[in-house]
Image (cartoon, rainbow, N blue to C red):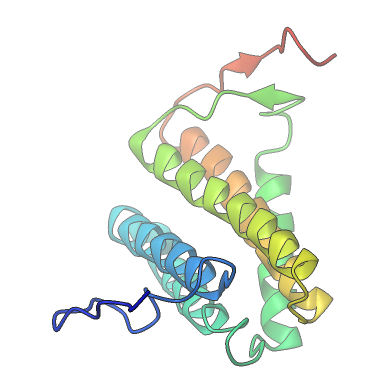
Amino acid sequence: MDKYRSPYEAYPFLADEDQDLRCDFEILTDRMSSLTGLLAAKCPARREELLRVDELIYHFNPSLRTFFSIRDEETAWLAALTQSLAEEVSGRCERFVLPAGSERACIAHLARVDGKSLVRLLYRARQRGVKFSDAVLDFANLLSGYFFQLALWLNQQDGVAEIPFISRNYR
């Protein structure tokens, strides 16, 4: 079957074969980067930090198509930032909480879910034979963790309590 290529094509890899997950990865990182930009606009106190994370996500974007270009010191910076946020919000989340709260925290939760989706997509790609460094998986997981801690921090800053969630299915 011939592929139709629109003269208005939004991205050159959108017609990739369905088994090729690279474009899906790139679209998901683009979404996460867009959410990060939105957060930067809504969080003046963390604007520069969020713009740096945003840039890292865009460097992360072609990792499956080309190579993983995130430097060790950038990963270390994000890990330290995530740990610092976790210390600032210590006690706000003992188990599970609903992904709710202030508007800014909810945007961070959406980015957190995108991080988890990236991890899942990476595992699927690896199962299909795509070769990439474990650092790619580590960075995607770290992004999800960063946005989770940021969501808790934003709720704290916005004076919104976390809503505990007690699962009926898991104990």
